[in-house]
Image 1 (cartoon, rainbow, N blue to C red):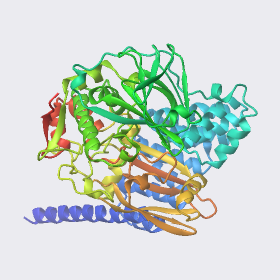
Image 2 (image 1 turned 30 degrees about the horizontal axis):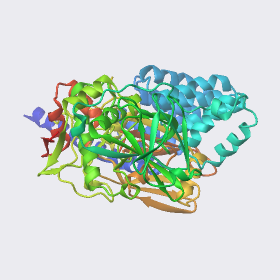
Image 3 (image 1 turned 180 degrees about the vertical axis):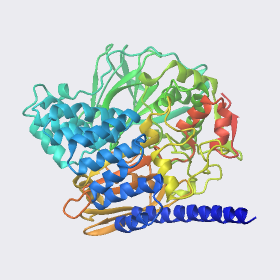
Length: 621
């Protein structure tokens, strides 16, 4: 009996010790998230040194500037975890021991080939050692693995310039200015490069061109299908367009002009014929398309650019305040032929594509009926992320057309009304309820749901679990997979003090950046309030889009940890963001839908998961 009692006491002490360790460990992580790194380190030193505590201790030493102790701590752990190897590579990088840093970053990439931040640091090592040519490959790899890693593009542009590869430098600075048109450094460098490049600017950095029009197959019984008005261009003074068979321009319903096949028509505000609002532009043949030159897309985002776009239907030209608005009139099913593969990868499972077709149709009709945002400019939806991405005919695929046709006329309703079927690329593991976002409203069917089988996974309960959740994706539907690009599910960005300060101070005049503190999180762990402290003041941000816009090219989501490292004039030299997901995470998770379809769920089951108590209704066409 005595032995049993001793064992019971021993197990109780063991349990209590484990409980206290977990609670105190979370206190340490909480202090770290407040940028109180010394306090965090003090707490961690008092805890039993198991592997979890040691991992956090290594990062704590790194944050307080004791890089040698950080390396020593990481080395005491098993080096089979990409996070530990990345920590070693980063700690030696900050010690300027570039040989060891490079070695551990390479080992990190052997375990996690998707780690764009490791590629970036490898590029930085070579640049700092004046091996500019060798750095190019690593910066390019970082962008391949995460095209949102804008900092790598900046360094790539600089390296090309240093190597006197002026055409390539000009091209990169052009892309940077598509992302951030107000960046003075890029503006000045591009202006200088105009005198150094070997070709004309439009040849060095050409838009994506379309040289042959498509003969399109109309949707079945298209005359029955409702029309949409899609804003393709706004605030432009000149538009170039053509069609394979030629185009016809009508003014007040009377034919005013006919072009030859493939003849490019330039419509300019300087021509009086186009300054009325009764201009219609149609292809000569019903099965032909119209190609519009130089359509700017994704302005402000990391993938921003300029390309030709090809469209079904016809156009209406509106003149307002000395500039043009170009509106594509197209039936909703043919609109979806392009929207579906613009919003979801078209080789994903058929059931995922069907779910996307239903919600894209529902969202388009919802916005047409209820949204007033674009009505003042004469159209229902724009062609960008603001409404739904609509890239035109060249984006269409057989699988996307098949999914649209298979769900023809199907929309989601809730209590007899069209549902507002919001969606995002990747929810990071749990969607958000609509009311959890600042300025949004309560919508009964837009409730947060875990993106996994509840019997397999639950949400993190504390910061320690959140850290693990963000750095090591669990078994969730939207985890990295053959359907989900790794960086859309889990990502790291390393941003220098100068770059971050320059960007943030355009909107918030707070000086040098001291701290970025997630002050409030919602149930899904997305940040609801972010505090930024600087040498000249502080600011708190609550709106989802503003939190994501604190860096150039936007953060992919508001579900992240942020940490400061190194010293630069008494401030952190680098800010490292460990994040998960892409988008606002309200409604359907597209990666999650692909994951569910892969496991055998049908599209109706997928829709029921993400939109509580909604049902499918077939429209009468």
